[in-house]
Image (cartoon, rainbow, N blue to C red):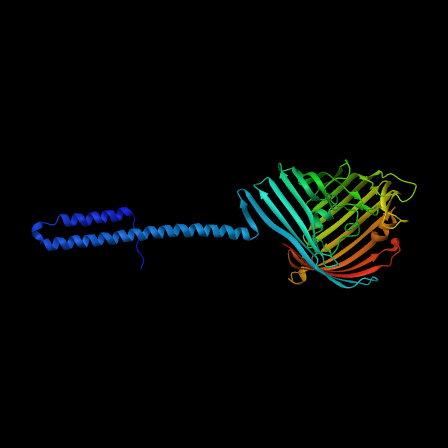
Length: 441
């Protein structure tokens, strides 16, 4: 049975009314027994009122406790959902991508194989509206079954105003378009990178340093800019370039890079990139009588790119040209196994480019299934002059024909046939068939 909740003053007034009604009864109209009975009744009613008041207070306290617990549970559920607020003024978000693939190749020694692909979780923490911290890890399983974890980037973005953002930390290189904007597997229109834009390629991967970047409106057009200073690339063990981001510099010269973009009309962008840096030759043991001292050399890179992305169309072209000056550095000894020797390397000339065209069939049909298909064509080249080992390993011409099926806006099945021509390196051509399932979240 529910007890009607009434404020305290209602019960006090009712008790006073009972007392008053008993007091005004004339003595002549009631015997002593009647008065005693009325007093006992009044005491009973008053006791009942006090019990109701106690129950009402207990119910109010329980309701307050339930409300507090519900609020705490809602906050916990919001934190567990992957986004929300973890501190005053701070919000956060979990994103990233993952993929799995299958490769068929006709190259000698190459086995058809499944690949677990990559898992790249990315975390974003925003403080109010002026500070963003973002970081992405890459988790992969190598051919030996070992798990490798790498830090793709970890950066602070300080939004100074609508046109200027200051960036500090490890960031994806702003040189060119592919690495900074297109390399995630669910965004890339094909299962792998263009020739010269992946491993041992010419496009810088990451750097550690600072950036100033932003955009400036110009009528209906817009200019974008990125200027960066970082630790820069290094010479690797074979004398080739290592264009990864390093947590410390091996010399006092900083790499300067950047990109300038122009969007003359909506959906169209033209860009120019550059990087200049000084490389330090590596020290090594000298097995022979004649010794060379490691020297420094300059590395200069420039590039051009253009893209058109409107509706069902995705068209791109990108070009990079790099030159490393002559340098003396330590590489594995050709005469004494297990040792290194300082060797003079001549100028190194590198060139990479690709052009790509993709079209979503939803532009020509209303059929929901057919409209999810997307044919893709890509052709690219990577050429190397001045370092035979790098030319033999990486230089190639590559042609891809693909057909994607978009299960959802960020879920795609890539299917492609790839022809790789290594004539310049003296290797046989290779044909690949690749299937890849990618999901961006």
